[in-house]
Image (cartoon, rainbow, N blue to C red; front, side):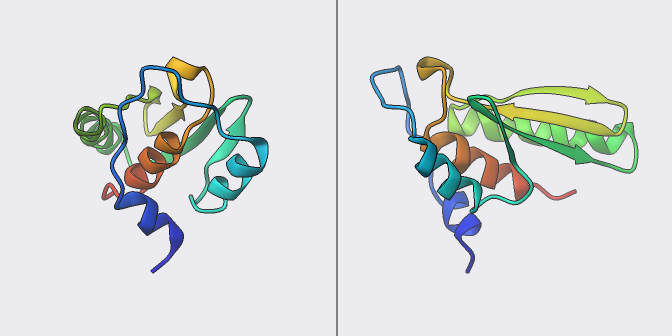
Length: 111
């Protein structure tokens, strides 16, 4: 079992602030556990590509359901057959473990 699947088994913990941002070292360790996610300032980002618009929107709908279940909501934009996803913990304006848990879960959505 890889570390990403371990992250995907976790559940996002509600965060209303008061939680410390991950240190740069912790962010680096977490990035090693999720495939294809990149650091973008104080956020993580990934581009997902699909065969067409319908497939991209199917992913967006599954992502929305997952985000609601987890209580952690990514930002995203759709460009026909691409979906750009950006995740960070808004309440702390930085990265928390929740961001990497959600990233690992998004990676498990069938494409």
